[in-house]
Image 1 (spheres, rainbow, N blue to C red):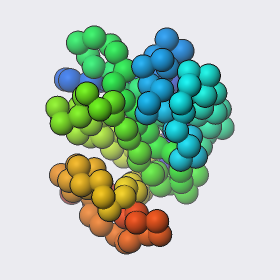
Image 2 (cartoon, helix red, strand yellow; image 1 turned 45 degrees about the vertical axis):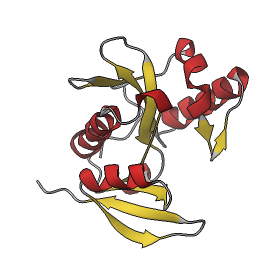
Image 3 (cartoon, rainbow, N blue to C red; image 1 turned 45 degrees about the horizontal axis):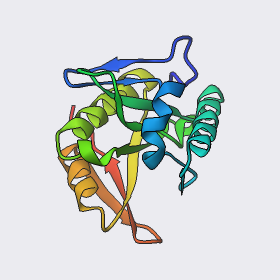
Image 4 (cartoon, one colour; image 1 turned 180 degrees about the horizontal axis):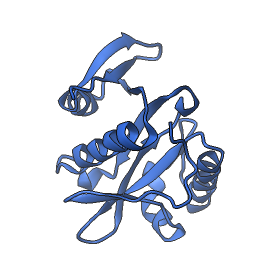
Length: 166
């Protein structure tokens, strides 16, 4: 396994988007989708504090969190990353996209890049994701990306696992 932190923070580039580090200049645009421990930021200060915690988690080898940048503008339009289980050779993949960018293929591209990075670079043995039963779009996305439902969880949540067909 090749766990974070890395000598250089990995930037993963695709045709439509790139996964890159979140800079302080990006935070203002991300307040509405900034979360830490399931708590949502409501102010710039809270979002910046959350990003500091996320960065510390990365430095401790517990996670890797990317901003999803539109390649045309380099603006961050969402986030994704691995947030739990890396020390066990597993990764919980999570993602969130600003509402005005949803339904345009950005998240499919970001998740595919993150999955490939998890398999080929981190060498994860298992990738999973958790969503709510009500989040139909997330369920459809996961299923399109070869995730299968594993179990129903408490609080109306569902766990999905990535099945690598290679």
